[in-house]
Image 1: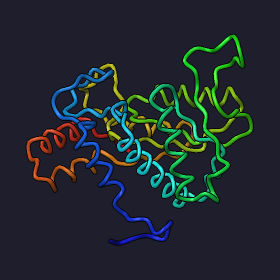
Image 2 (image 1 turned 30 degrees about the vertical axis):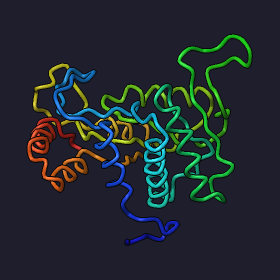
Image 3 (image 1 turned 135 degrees about the vertical axis):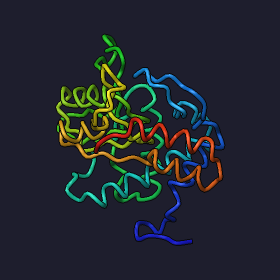
Length: 241
């Protein structure tokens, strides 16, 4: 099996991740109404990574994505903290940091994790952050899927308020679709939420896989019906970036 220079790891983590998602019905196909009101032919539910094997699969994929992301963007400061926005981001941050340490202990053993509370605690240690303090730290954010970008903006503001700096966003799936509008059938080109965040805040982003990767996987497995529905959806809503 072909390997690259980073820890001699195989180059198959994207395919392995997609296969795990499909086998465990974390990626499903049908008709789903998104928060934006769009009717999507597929749905990704990171909350379904709830057994040890699946957590290992997603942690492995995130870890290798982060390693590649940082290697290909040498200007990004090394993260001091892996931040997982409540709620789905919390286990993702924790299991990914453990996997990063397993892969490269020298680089990751002293990196911390942190997450926010939905409601601030007014007793005990108090505050809105659990785990490492964010002040004067470089923060790498992990989340599942970004569609409208609202959660991304909220996270940037949370970290900024705590006097930290977001140096990157890594998500599991980049849907590659344009930001919703009031008239979502207008046919006008618009960037994706991740593209808009890059433009507004100058924060680099990465994903384990994209909609393109999913379509390629379906083509290789011969699932023509779902592949064609995803291609139609991509054609209708594809982002301009």
